[in-house]
Image 1 (cartoon, rainbow, N blue to C red):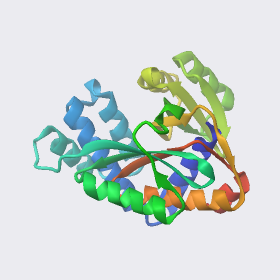
Image 2 (image 1 turned 60 degrees about the horizontal axis):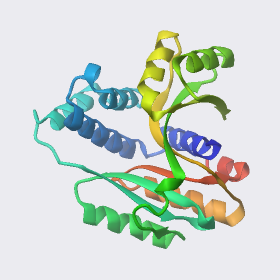
Image 3 (image 1 turned 90 degrees about the vertical axis):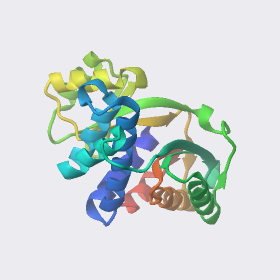
Length: 248
């Protein structure tokens, strides 16, 4: 669990400080469009859409972009049709990789994913080869400077969360996927503001990765993240903290 939390923290901080903001917007817009397509455009009755919109707002996406993405999903505006596809594979050190995508061209996406994996020391596996090693969970991120550990812990556990841990300068609240939205609502009701929330794949067991393998794995996951079609990359790696710090 800690490995994913630390990697997620690094990705968000890098997105806020380099040229990746445009790519982040692209991924968020796709998620909003698909959420609206599958569950309708009303945030009150579509938890997935509300989550996507909340994350877009926390990333400072303009309101007009959000509205257009919703309308494309509901069919009010013409848009591209996206398909949700997950790819499974392996990275340096033998770690498992679970790669979620939203794509309008499956052939292009699988070619891009395979190219990055092959180029950077990984390999593409078959469907089901690593997915069984992960559990679907929700994670909610709270800036430690805004709330005390006690207040976050009490609100999260009272709302039904499984765990609260400190990762860098934020609290990471982990929930079962089935109560993810209820926990968010409970924390809001308790006055806890959070930076971001997401559904993730948490490994049942982690593999320690150090040295050169860790460096290669970070480079690989970063390159996969840079593919527009890729929404999220999860691994079962426990990456050396010094190497993670250097990735900042």
